[in-house]
Image 1 (cartoon, rainbow, N blue to C red):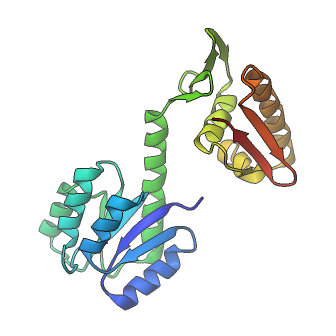
Image 2 (tube, helix red, strand yellow):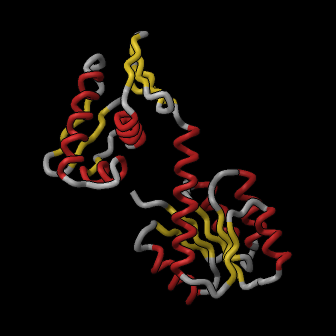
Length: 226
């Protein structure tokens, strides 16, 4: 699933070029004024915000302040023609993660977006380390899964695999998607290891008939759970 970016820019030409580039990798929701962008932020979930500073109705600094009052973690990148050091410092003090001066390169912007998304995802995983699935309690940090007082020790890879399934519960995951996420490659031998791990997880979940890892032929797997 593509990460969702809130992009706010009132320069029509620049907005079209930037959004067109970003949409190759991300879902981009564009607004040309701060007020509409903030209304959207209150109604939708975004993984990252890219904000121009000079905006109508609500400027980028005001928009970032309002966003931070609702969400202290979502990454924010400012894009601005304002080159003064004071403006950059103001933006960072408001809680922005970075401040790029126009004209910026798409390569640099894309790289920064990817870095902040990865950091945000890592922090989220560290924070959300304990899960409940059916009658099971899963601790992703200590690699354990507990059912009716009985605790089973998982390997690090089994734990990472289970966490990926739980975070995408009831969603089909492609084989290559799982392999690249957990093993970093989708070659044949890693695929065999994954099949062994999935088999072990299936045995563990036999204790709760509501939970199953379905094989989707020629596609991948889906964790079905309440």
